Length: 73
Image 1 (tube, rainbow, N blue to C red):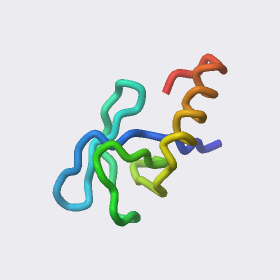
Image 2: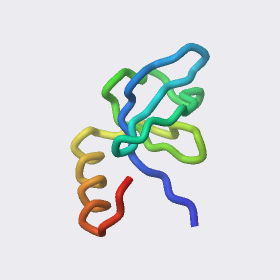
Image 3: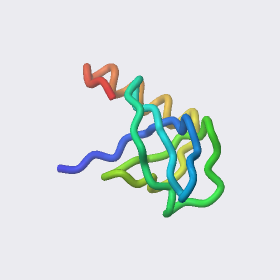
Image 4: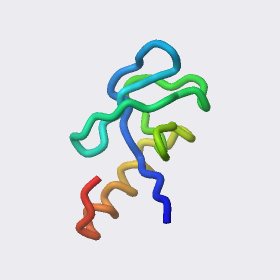
């Protein structure tokens, strides 16, 4: 089973790359599949790629559900 999770964009780097924050863990991801991503945006990340931008309220709800299940992301 694969899981795509919301992550907040912490830094925008050169070459369609960014650093995202996943519950305190910072990870390099590719932004090559998206346009107009800014610092502070939430994106859905899967296998190192940001797949889509996510509404901040929706991202917070999803992260809260993970926390409620006892899963830390």
